[in-house]
Amino acid sequence: MTFNKKITRFGVPILVLATFIIAANFVASNPPQAKRGKPSAAPQLNVAVQTINNEKLTLKISSYGTVQPRTQSILMPQVAGEITAISDNFREGGFFEQGEVLVKLDDRDYLADINIAKANLYSAKQALTEELARAEQAKQDWQRLGNSEQASELVLRKPQLLAAEAAVYSAEAQLAKAQLSLERTEIKAPYTGRILNKAADLGQVVSANTQLAEIFAVDYVEVRLPIKNNDLPYMNLPERTRFETEVKVQLPSVTIYSELVNEQQWQGRVIRTEGAFDQNSQQLFVVAQIDDPYGVASTNGLPLKIGQYVRADIEGKSLSEVIKIPNKAIYQGSYVFVVKDGLLKRQAINIAWQNNEFALLEQELTEGEQGLTEGDLLVLTPLGQVNSGTPVAVVAKDGLNLINNKVASASSQATRQQKQRQVKNLNADKAQVSQNARTNKEPAL
Image 1: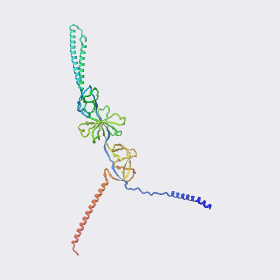
Image 2: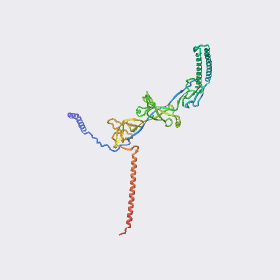
Image 3: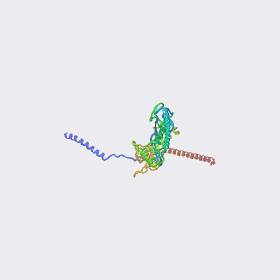
Image 4: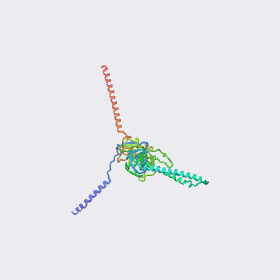
């Protein structure tokens, strides 16, 4: 009894362990094998493509800036006085012409100064006349005394004569100065322009160098435009040396846009390049000029305002034999997808220049790179996580819907076949009728 208990106690676990070991060896020796079928050659994606062609293109460089006046000045009086009259155009936004009287000061004190200066001039001339007579008398007295020697200047009263002449010149200068002060009581516009800010009004007493208004010229305005460093090789910058009087290159045209009210645009040109890079942005600035912004051509819509934010498209260089692709076809800025032999292929690219709409590709590639070539089919359809080599079907090419064309072609072919069958059946019916007629005419045997 004791022996049987020992066998049961130790034998059963050993038997179970041996069974598991045998089963594990069997599974390890006979692993499961997955049956893999060949990948399906049926198209898995529908894509739209664009045929790659070499193009001729004139670039447009985008920029932005604010409108600035060509000339901006502070209008100040040169004499003191009370403002007695102002022009109707002397207000914020008012236009004025060169030489127009904008402000008039009280001139009564200056009229009095002119009369005083005239009186002083008359007195000086009277003293000069008397001194001339004394000098002539002194000369005659010297000669009557029988002196053979030349009379001295003191004897001839030349110093006193010079002093009298000097007094006349001084009185004339004082009169001219008084007349100039009187003229300055009328503050005139130095150029044709517009009032930016008004700082004085009727009845105000002003002194010399008191600010009356801030004005600016309206013959043309300027826009300071930053240029990206990547755009510099594709622009014709208006540069010149200190020995040149004119810019050698043709001034690039520029179109200014504003969406302040409605989309408006103005035409101008880039007239100069600044002499240094901006310290904050490390970009080079060019200056665009818009002629006559407040003339007849500005009546359509809202005229340009000083300080207004605008966009600009600057004419760049004209390029030939370049490959242009839309930005939506570029992935991670380094590759695109093309269709070759019905399969999707990933193609690496090098971007030479890019704006918000499209990119230009570099033509010279490093060894081992293929890039895009003329005739390649560029995929325009946005793709997710796809693998190179996936079968695809082209449903649109160069903007043309191929499926609709195929359906229309098949429909047209079916229509032609149906007409052919109808004609064939009609001919058969005619032949049967003719046969029946001949049969009816034959005599019975």
